[in-house]
Length: 159
Picture 1 (cartoon, one colour):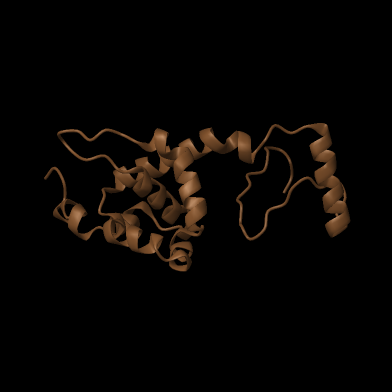
Picture 2 (tube, rainbow, N blue to C red; picture 1 turned 45 degrees about the vertical axis):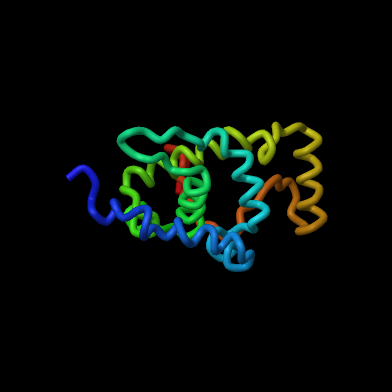
């Protein structure tokens, strides 16, 4: 079978089709779903739209930029698996994986200069000074909060 019957029902039963428009009209619910405000979503979408816009073909419709960003945000915000998102968005697991990968890559390419500007000595010193003043933590230039990060130790470096 070329496409599973559940996925063929994309246009009529996909959560995105009806939900996106409804959520967009209700900012609090939109924030709960996407983990960002409508204005932030629209601004991010405006920045990413050219790179996330593809042509429809005779074989299938392309995934819209709005849906690509929504799928990616649901994946990042909830930690759901691609096979779980299949039922929300009525797309194949490999399609969802490709959408998330390409959208994340596009976000990085388009926004890295804005979000992660090239560090200078003055910026590092300013950040370290802010940590010293705010948390009495000297020589610190960054911190993570609320996220477990697995770190692989370098070889021959002890425990």
